[in-house]
Image (cartoon, rainbow, N blue to C red; front, side):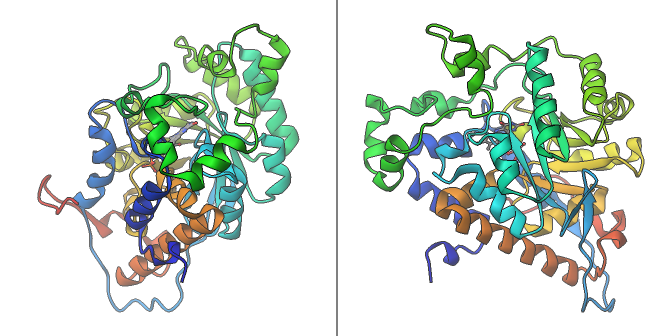
Length: 391
Ligand SMILES: Cc1cc2nc3c(=O)[nH]c(=O)nc-3n(C[C@H](O)[C@H](O)[C@H](O)COP(=O)(O)O)c2cc1C
């Protein structure tokens, strides 16, 4: 049995990832902003909900298929956009997308990805979403819209929780540089992980594949790609820009980073077809609420039609059941699949998705649910804070 197959859950895969990656790289995945309160709370908040089961319901056949971004999904899970994926494994986004395709799930590619969106689209026939930003250069955003349409992407997720970069102190302590370089500080950790370091430092060029042409085009003296893209984040973005993007794209569009019912309502009124309730996995505004706690109010405000996707803190299949019972269309995961990827490439992501799917189905059966459409709020109960066992 391979080492990765002995991982029984996300926590085991996380430990495997930690052993395989140099510490600065692991911390880049694992860490959050400031005191990491939201990072922890995203996960522990799920434990404050009890699942209230039905019994004797004939669960010999469980229906889990759903639609997200207007596209079919085998069960209500999707893979969130994560930047810089080549840093975690040489096969990068393609390995993740292939595993997602095998499991019948939607994959989302980050603007900050290390694979060109056209290359991903060619390799991956399944439904896919592109994560977009509204940049200072609106022309660059419009260019992405056109490229996504041309390449056959099915949806866009507009990330709105990054007017400035979050304060990730683990990255400061570890001295992580982007792209990763051998600094004196990180040398020790890189040297201890040659199976990661040698291919990473000698292999194919590490860059932000979707925007690198911009810097070539600018022929911009000393301006590096990372400086260029860092300078593109626009603090003045507002709802008017969402209306503009919705018109430009004219297709399934989710606003990623919405936390309140009011902003969810505004998103739909501005032309979006859904929201991703998200605090960026606790990497931006520390102290923001856990996504799971916001689902019910958001659903009650936007009504039945829009996609309401719970993004952040999902570590068990049972977490997905809780989110659906509260009113989510689906859940989305970031770190869990990155741990799988870092642990064992495509096999690791595959293993993670198998584990989570098994947990999801088992939980449904134990809760007496034979069709996800039958899940409702009476299947979950919120326990007073602090009464759950927090791991
Ligand atoms: C290493 C890493 C990189 C990320 N990069 C992006 C990104 O480029 N764009 C984006 O919208 N979100 C990004 N995210 C946030 C994820 O899309 C998602 O919101 C978050 O990981 C969900 O929380 P979880 O990790 O607890 O599942 C990133 C998250 C991680 C862990």
